[in-house]
Amino acid sequence: MRLGYAECGPDGVTLSSLKTGGDLDGDSPVSAFLVSRLDFDVQALEIPNLPEKEAEGLIRYRLRALYPGNPNETVFDFHRRQQGARSRVVVFISNRSRLDKYRSKVPEKPVLLPYCLIEHTARILENVRVWFCHASWLELSVFREGFLVSSTVVRRTTENEPDCARLDAELPEEVRALPALVIASESEVGQIRKVMEGHRCRDVRFLDYQELAAMHKKIDGLFRVEKRTSVLRTPMARIVGLSAVVVVLGILFFFKQLRIAEDNFARLQNDRAELESQSGRRIALERAIDDLSVTYSRLETKRPKDVYRLLSELARVLRDGVQIRGLVVRGDGFQVEAAGSNPLRVMEGFHGNASFTGVKLSQVVPDAGSGPERFSFTGEFHAP
Image (cartoon, rainbow, N blue to C red; front, side):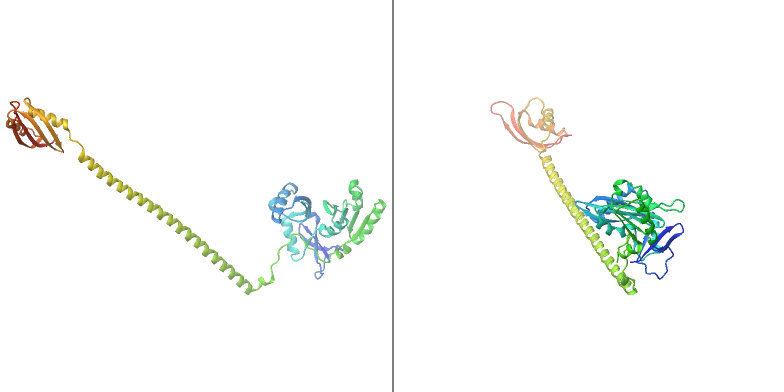
């Protein structure tokens, strides 16, 4: 695998040979591009074992406290390895616009960071510190038990250019106690070797870019974009695909309309049942009203007449000398049995009273025990 180098500057992305630092030949068969470590942040996290989508959400949440960029403009990719009940995750973070610039310049090539090239070797060595030396920057990666635990980058400038060997000598003792792996250009490897030997650094290995690239036949890049298959690019395939989409949308629309119609039908059935229930209650209410009317009429016919008023009027007509022996009242009609003298004169009193109509003398019988006669009369009484 041959590597190229891509760096994002204020004027856009520049491509160069990782080996020589010069411009790339347009026909050069570069397999992948190493991007500037200065444009990307690398974080090592430990998270629970989660499905891919849930792990991505948890990492995004954790990055809010680790990465100072705008969350809406932050993009990241990650490599995950399981360790017992937890996972070790290496997260690669950048700004969306910066990544888009790289993508526009190398759209068909894998984008790499030093971790992609050194992870396999570090896993074999398990405990190691790795210096990756580029003309513009230096990266120190510390691995323990094959897992990345820290990654730091230092910018190299012409005014005060950091030296890998000098920085290595200033590391904490627990880091310097780890074996070292230095990766640099072929010319710089020799210089760094001499300085480190002068510092009496032990257990140090060196690799140049060509040797490092030769160790990888093929490597997956970061921030991968799913490629469309060539079949979809043909006009006929597009027509077939669009037709299939139209058919699917038509079927979905049909079932949606069918579901709406079913919902409307169910709602109409409920309305019909409610109307039938209301109609049944109304009919029952009308029947109850009719029954009450009949009952009221029946009670009205059976309501007793004002007997006291009748007796009062009878007393006014009969006056003294007539005794009522019996009284029967049926509706407006009445029958009176009385005893007294001169029944005919009594009958004349009824004719002068408008409350009585149809009064008839029906029987006159002399009373054997006393002088007055016994008589009876019938008629109707209408109270004013």
